[in-house]
Length: 466
Image (cartoon, rainbow, N blue to C red; front, side):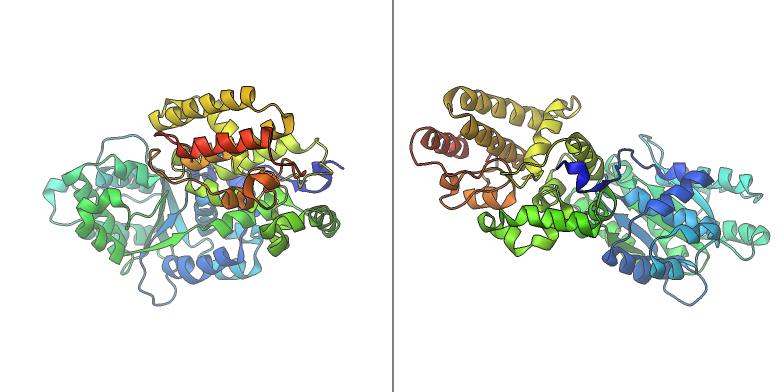
């Protein structure tokens, strides 16, 4: 039995860009392939749509969508903007409740999509210049005065909308901005205050006009410690923006329903396979449904991946797709659960030349290489050696979840056992952990050498891996 016999694999290997959804055919594909979890359906229907619509009274605000790289943030923005600009795309939505609620915004907007790159212009200049070009392209003439000639931006935005209404009396103007946080990170002191002030004014005009603003950011803007020096400006922005987060369960649902979709026969086969090992894994026994849904991905993979701080490379759906593609033609092991957990992510980190330029990542790789060499030469039993190396990989990935590589915060044997690295019964004192090997080994010999090496790894001086 091969892995491809157990799943209906649909890879996610490309990074979606908001601008690309301007193409009608591609937009239809994005809408059709967007997988909506129950929680995300509630977020869309109860939070996002009420703030975007303009048909019934509401304290309309701007919307910030918070999601790490690769969690579907740009996909969500693309779906919302595509449907808002073309009601014909409603038919492609896969969730009936969302489809019904989005009917209230379907085709109701002219949509401006923006992705802010590595530029030094202020936020007002970026948005206003793009607005002028966009409006001219749809037959609306308006020119923003220079910032030095006005006392506030809201009056200009109101005037702009009057010009817009004269051409599109029944529609609204939706401004969608992706990857905004990187831009704000590059702004300093006074310039950042001005940018946040303009963002606040954009949010404020949503209440009294048909301007709507939705933006994607990689992490929460309002409780981000990097912006605490402008806390008061942030508080004012927060008053006029609603923040919604793409949670881990939303990502897990996409993994289940798109990457690793299964029919009932496949689910039964997976359950039968995993039940042989449930007695060895407490978490698996207690959460068999979750393990079957995500198979062959261990749930701990998603949990740990979310915390890896090298955020620019956290394209989780793409990375899992690459993992699974490598497995498809391999046989599912008879004596092993056959799960992929976060220890396997270490090879992707080591093979990525861009990541190796990060000083902290390089230190962890160098330290792990030293320990790896000692394990390869010092642990004689091949099975024990393989388990030791996978534990090392798990500890190395975990080291990149702590924010500071010298923090002495590692994984206990029980956490390794439950979270994904292959540990023998003697390694934790009880039962084995993630996939790899679950055969019994007597104390002594390579087992003791294995334990001593892991103990030394946990006690070593910074930079530490555990």
